[in-house]
Image (cartoon, rainbow, N blue to C red; front, side, top):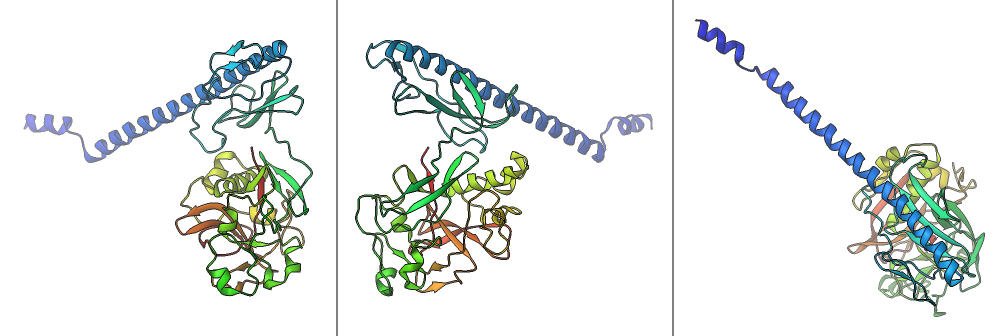
Length: 369
């Protein structure tokens, strides 16, 4: 009898076992989070030390060479172009990012035409000392909050069309839809017009104007390009610019979300950086990108999105051009490509990955960086 009592006192009940398992899992999770944050802090600390080292080397370079270098190549030595003097045995390489708030894989170095000013763009993953997470710009021996965005007030395409621009977060965008009819080498982009077969079978690049009315292409609605025109190596956007990728649209979505005062973590959750999430996302980011002349648009950031309609892969025109906006990206997915949809009655943004490459949509260009 006593033995049975001892056994009963020493055995674990099912509830006790579940509590022990839960505590072990909780401790393991906390340890994992701690080390993840610790590694992030180490990476951010290295970035700031790297940039400080690079800045010191740049100032020495200018002192002896008379100007700042033309380029910095991560992993390679920084050698004076005239003296042959070594200013850095190895240009530091940026640690690999472990979140999607930072976008550039390297320390992005630029200089002005006279080579007497420079900028180094980089990013911190989290809060570090007195710095907030996000884009940073280093110059004149200091580090400043925000991106090193040099965005002209307007740009021109090869046809002579002028486009206003806008800075949103760390990106410089065209604030209008593209309307160019030539590639950057001066050759014409195919315009099939009413020839449906020519549109349907095109794989070299083509554009359309809403309802085959050329005057529609000259408005802020712009032209409707198939993916083959977007991906043509001759270049669709002005020099120094390119058709925005799916990834860059995700950056835009996050930047718009953060500009409303939301946390970076929250914005990354509702606008995930992946190549699988599609459908209606966000809260009011679509409305904030729309022009005030369109439906419920508030154009808070100057993106001035307008409705466009689109040319179907069967050659017909769909959607009322006063209702919906269809914007292509330069990112393909199998036989299709990613695009964004904006509805007159919806405040959110729709990610769509099933747009056939022969379908004509509007295009937005973003500055190279």
